[in-house]
Image (cartoon, rainbow, N blue to C red):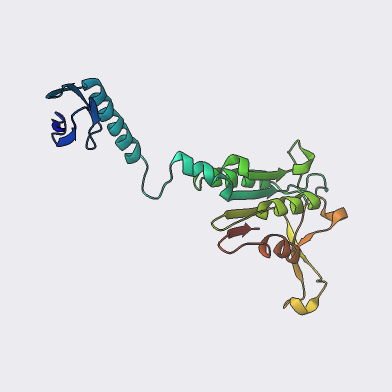
Amino acid sequence: MEKELACSDCKPKFVVPTKTTTYRSCECHCQVVCKSTSGYKQSRENCLGAKLFNQTQLHTASRIAPGHSSSLSSTTTINNKRAVLCGVTYSYSGRRYTLKGTVNDVINMKHLLVEKFAFPIQSIRVLTEEQKDPNFIPTKRNIMESLKWLVKDCKLGDSLVFYFSGRGTQQPPHDEKNEIDGFDETICPVDFITAGMITENEINSTIVVPLKEGVKLHAIC
């Protein structure tokens, strides 16, 4: 035996078995409660709750602009953006080499990446002489280690940035055949006088060669 029920909110009728005591409308998700085999009453509380739930979902969705992910998606992509920012003043290398403004350059770049390009703060590594952690002083060793960290486990869709504000120069290359002008371009870490400079070939082999297909790298020196 079957009977016919109708939702008083969304109006459609449903044919259900006679012994059915409750039924949830597939249209508005309201719960229809039967008085007897020949009648029913509407649970207004459930009906109102369903309406509010649907409106809340709609309001939340309307605040997510096209092309932007939800909080869940943001969490899953938090490691897809990394940056290494180096600012060297050479304050310990003598007045001859000292630069002003390089730390401010790094601060401004970090602000740009976070505010404009949504880089997570925890995915940005800053190296300056003001850092208390000795691993983040811009020595040659620390810069090279940070560059390895930058590209480690990179994958399709990742966005990577290497920014260096400091001195750069040239030096005779190990292999003159690979240099049209006969010199290697270099950047100078804070300890370049004792540890040496970082050449373009070292940078290339550390952060360019290991890149996977589909990874974007911006190197600004």
